[in-house]
Length: 229
Image (cartoon, rainbow, N blue to C red; front, side, top):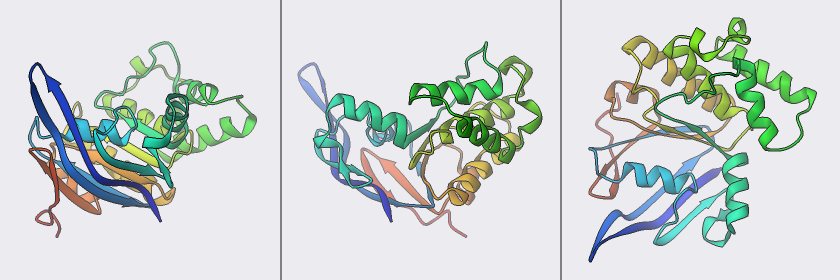
C-alpha cells in the first residue's frame, strides 16, 4: 500500500531577481514496510525534498499525497496535525530535552497529541525495550552515549505510531559501529511496524540496509541500483 507519493513535484526559490529550481519534477512512491535512501551532493535538493515530504514546505508545482490525502488541500492546522500524528522525524542530532529522562522524552510527545493514557506509557516502554534501552529509561541524555541518544530519537519518532519516518543524516554524529546499529534499528522498526521510511544520507555504507536507493542531482531524483548487491 502506498503511504507517500510525490507527483511531478517542483520547488522554486526566489533569490533576488533570480529563481532557483531546488526540486525539478520529482516523482516517487514509498510503500508500507519500505525503507528508501536518498543520496546526493550538498545543494542537490535533498533537504528541500525531505522538508516537503515532512509537510514543512509547500511544493511550487505538483502534488504530495500522504495516506490518500493531498497536502495541497490541507489547511495549516490540518498540516500541523498531520506532522504530529503521521510523520516521525529523526534528525542529525538527537535533540533530546536535557532535563527529561529517556521515558519522558517519549511521553512528552504523546502529551502533545492529546491526553496521556496507560497504554501510551506501555507502548513507550515496549519501544524502548525493542531498541535496547530497557535499562536506560530513567537516565538523562547526558548519561547516555551518542548511539544511545540516537536510539532514543528513533523511539521518539515512532511513539505516535506514524505512517512515515523521515531520517535526516541520522548517522552524521556517530562512529562507524553506532552508525550501523542505528540504521539497522531504523530498518528493523520500519519492517516490524510496517512504516514507510525515507533516509537522506551521505554515508554510502548505510545503503545496504535500504530497499531502494535514489540519487538527487540538480533537483532531479533518479533510482540508483549501483549500490544493490
